[in-house]
Length: 478
Image (tube, rainbow, N blue to C red):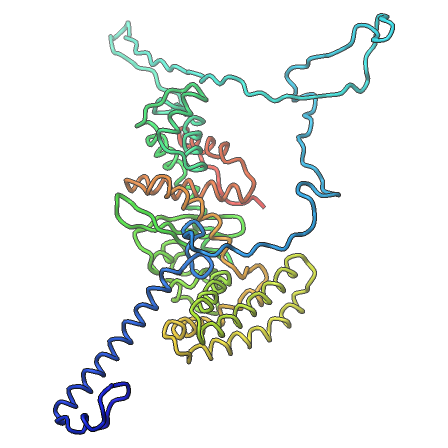
């Protein structure tokens, strides 16, 4: 048998070695080489995993370590800091006279030169207005139910509580404020109780805070279900999900965002079942999302894959080095070119027709690079390129459909509020608590989209529940 390369044994000694021993040596060398190759691949995989950051993966910037390279700084514009020439100020405007509760007149009595008495009025005095919060004291309403005895037959008859009287100790606006503080600002129950006492002089036990949240949640049920039905009927929906915990067990907070309504659901699954629970079985619109496998059941022709995530995938190829780096840099360049054209679409300097024409060579180049990437010498790169190729039509849906965005920002932005809430409270401790989270987030994000008053809406909803009246709607009016 031939002397294995790299084995420091004289040829004559190798030839005198028994065949059986040569076989054992060659076999051991082959096993060692295979083991070394596996270990090198594992080290490369672990090194790539350690080096993952917000530039080359879906990890948020808050998870970046100190070794993560900083984001490239934008080129200085040469302008001074602050408001620029021609910028319209947003100073506080004076309120009209009918909205002013108190006027303090500062009129001079005598001339500052000669001391003569001054009379008359300044038709255009300088005006300065100060807004001040009044000390808020709760309005306490006591209901008294009388029971009277009949003088004729002796029977006792009780009065009836008035319609709309709250069952508990707090009225609709108080309930709404508790729900608003928790759902809009993510305040803890202790912080809510403290603010209610210090800011509104309404003492509330720690157990009363979640009780009021549950009352708000129950009042929101009809409006939120109506919003979910509306979302399922839209031509396009952007979706995303983030981890959660319910009673210490893994759960996921899902969001479905449209242009005017955003809905949340909290589920114990991150699979395709979550999509069905949010969008229903018969959703026929266009779905915008990242490349999470749960979305792969959708027809790529009715889907838009997020290019911001793809850009990070291409950065990961660059960081991997070797042939992957070459493919990644070329794909990254095409992505930047694509976004430069898209930004012109948004600012109105490029027509849809011209945009579509400019995208065609980019599309061909991206597809060709992905096809080459399937044959590089790195298994993870091959897998990434192959998986993106399977979704290739979903990369370009936004080119042919007006109103479709190339990124999933429409879902990621509202989901951040849920992420911040999770980091603050570490999840929910009951199914009822999870219902409150998904319902109040749906209300807060939807009303902010529509520029409607969240607190006023919550107050009306709680009042409607107390009065057994029709609940206000979250749906847009026009």
